[in-house]
Image 1 (cartoon, rainbow, N blue to C red):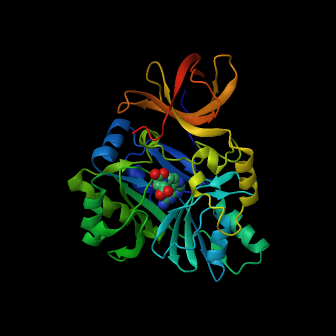
Image 2 (cartoon, rainbow, N blue to C red):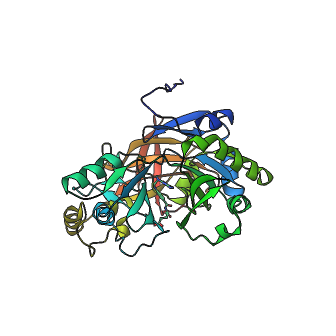
Image 3 (spheres, rainbow, N blue to C red):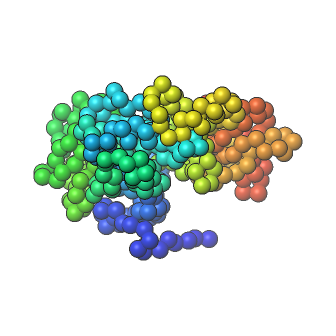
Amino acid sequence: MTFTIGIGPNNRKSCYFDATVADGVKSFSVYNHMFIPAHFGDPAAEYDRLMNGVAMWDVAAQRQVEIKGPDASGLIQYLTTRDMSKTKVGQGRYVPLCDHAGNLINDPVLLKLEENRFWLSIADSDIALWASAIAAERGLDVQVFEPDVSPLAVQGPKAEAVIASLFGDWVRELTYFGFKQTDLDGIPLVLARSGWSKQGGFELYLQDSKFGPDLWAKVKAAGQPHGIGPGAPNDLERLESGLVSYGADGRLQVNPCNPFEIGLGKLVDFEKGDFIGKAALQKIVADGVNRQRTGFTIDGEPILHFEDNLTVVDPKGVAVGTLSEATYSPRCGGNIGVGMIAKDAPDDLFVTYDNETRQLHLARLPFV
Ligand code: THG
């Protein structure tokens, strides 16, 4: 059975949309109300480019929420669980956002552009609405809006050579999550060392979507000598690397979880001032966190990649967790997945996949 998703006004096109179509995109997903390429039809080649070469990804759906004005840093402190008071202009940070019950509602990369100007580079949930409502209700003097910014990721061991050939050798000095306002032949962008893989790379935050096709073409041309090709945030690599995927690993409306459960507890700082969810999270810690995100290996034949919430049971058939995403990993020589597991769960675990019972084993993240 195959399905299609309509390309219509309910979801937005990225400024790289036409370029990805021309380059053979075969499947889209939807993220922040925008189409995002899912794959280009050759998973082995896309994975190989990420691991051994260089890949370019349309990640414009990682939308920015800009927060600027006299109360911007105060609002950022209140929205996030981390202490941002020591973060400098030009630094990025990975910052969990929680609701008042302590549930994770997003896990953006924060970019501090000026003392009182920030971008939250968000995962898939409506943070511009959330942040502007919080600001208005608290009477803060800030503007909260989605700017015309469209990230393009260049990932893989050869990404630095490609980016240096475009921008110069200074890019080699960028630290992880460090960024700089710059331009490429007059195309305005913020260049950051970041990206949703553990293979290294950069993200180009294009600041004017009319240059989308142009920027795509320039990166593609510069990458030719290094064998660049199109790709998308890679599920196999992210599972192997243990990167959090808000949406797959937890989503407020589907399988809510708190930062301690999902493995981001070290990014919750109770010593800083007040922040949304603080009281609830303190109670959660006091009561004891009784499940946690974990890796699984899954016995049996190679399984096709899936994202779902399959119930994990103990030998008596009692539910003790969920398996939320899994795939076959050639690098691990078997099936791997991530999910949530009760702290007191036994070692004998089972899941029903494709009408068949499979045994699972707990595995430490990251797998590699
Ligand atoms: N880049 C940008 N925006 C994004 C993502 C991105 N928005 C959506 C989504 N990805 C946000 N989620 C993540 C999750 C993990 C990481 C980045 C963004 C990540 N984690 C590293 C890790 O877990 O090893 C480092 C974490 C840390 O330094 O604490 O990179 O990818 N622009």
